Image: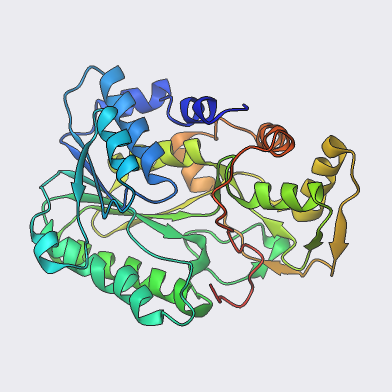
Length: 338
């Protein structure tokens, strides 16, 4: 893939499994926080799957829409849009009702020095939304950061492991989960907590950061020596199919790729493709932020895009000078300071 059009087409093409599952999901769909990195492609994937299934469900995207171009782009694809500041009480009350809600609203970067806003968005807002939409089912985006650093030899945290978030961003994300769990129990709201790390496309993500460092011959810190990644298109498909697995009390699902990825090994793979020798600093720690997504694969099957396919695509993108979002993942952060 060498163009944004090719990337968009690949990420928003629904699989047969998604189309069949969409037929089982009753009601319209609303995506809160559609303006983020994953929201636009998720909305377009949902609309294409609905159309392919021959259904008439509405897809509604909610965001502040500071970028008017995005709003026009979504509407051109048949997605209804609602401009809304979810922290504004009057805006919140005007939200349309939808049986299915993909909750993507939240904040990560800029937490340090702006902790109050992070907690308001990530922990206070979920309760207000749950109270406003008590008849909806929710797939709630969360993060693998709610887990602690764990020994690499254990292969990643499972849903049965207790969370122990490091830093205020991760703590506030656990707050989001707990608030939705509370309303799920109190009001019987079906909820699935979608613990994701790390989704990538060609314009951002862990693989792009490693590839760019190799290509530009910049040092790569190996302390966080192992990671998980998943193709964004696969993560979006899992999120939509997760609407069939919302429960009360809330269900929890780790979402990532099947491989425990060595940062060193991936850098060496990029080095082969670029004809460059990666520059490393520090040594791999015995612990890392890792998730085990076995439960996810049991429900939905393995991702359609393999690790080596992603490496090939990212390599070509970097060599061709493809555009990026300039939004680092900070995956090497071990102290929770985002």
